[in-house]
Image (cartoon, rainbow, N blue to C red):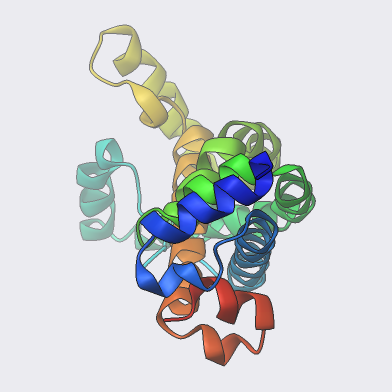
Length: 222
């Protein structure tokens, strides 16, 4: 028995019953790639449009915690419009950045190895999404940051936040993505994107028949 058929036989004997019908490498790889692409592109379409972030409370990007007290004071003194302007700019920046993920997502799907696909298909309810995040989060952050910067740099309150955050970071009071408005928005935009991809993956796993895809039904069907 050659290696390919031996691997399939071993998988068929050890996988849960609902995966045995798909116990061959090519089907597993094709199914995972299809789930990746479907989930990713659905998330990009959902978030990469007007109000994709701002109108969705699950992914709406909040003010950095460091700014919350200041924002409350500003609202109390009649400057709420400036706060709202910043929140809107932050979320619009994320909405503008997300479509940049499409090309990288597609190329990541095509480059996925059979070994990775076999590992992912046996994982948890968001193992496909977790794989995607591991492969794409860093390069997407690099793509998103300049877009976010252009979209927020015109807002004076964002500039003021960066000045204060820089001083706080120098004193060791701030670190991570809160050291600049742009990094804060970029990190939350990525979090929201992978959250929505995960939701799409859960839908596929819960009801692969509804996808209308034969390979998804074969690999993820119960």
